[in-house]
Image (cartoon, rainbow, N blue to C red; front, side, top):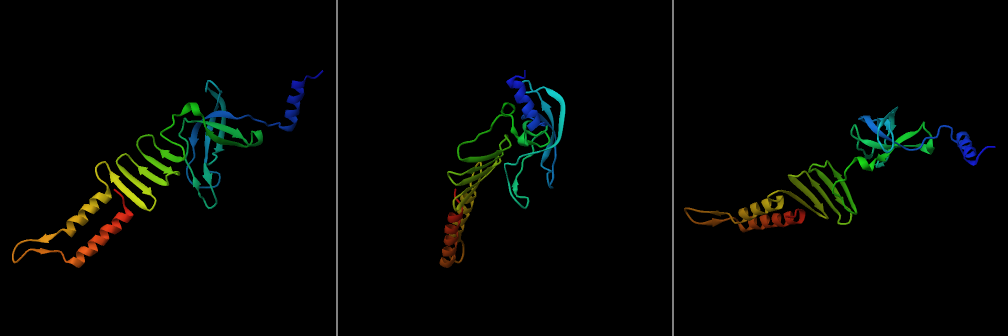
Length: 207
């Protein structure tokens, strides 16, 4: 008499003869460059739990993009060699593998927060979109660019671009000619123009 378990196994063998559950795998090679189905990796399948390598290799496994669209639009990031990834199979069919994501035990998350999209190299280079605050920040550890509403801020560790330019406007507005025959100041019309330039600057940049 066939048992219930055997019946189900036989049924699965008939319905899904090439079925394959998700597996962990280590990236052996990552492909680069444009082209149809070129966003992929060669991987070696691992044993779940111990992460020991098996003899099984899968070539050119497509990577599931974070975002993509027509005309080559998308967000692409090739995994490093040695990175442990999750390989899933479309409709559990071994003939259709794809990289669904990264295995959480094999990476350490960087600084991030709710409502933020963060790209970082883990060594001071950060690109952050703050959806809640409507702010975009680009920071390489030495220079920082911030887009905040209708203003932009460019600064390093000491001064902002606004502060530098604002000081120069102030110096030009206050310029005086000294010596013979008499003391002169900049033309009032020119001063008005420089003051307007200072106002325009404050509308574009913030300290």
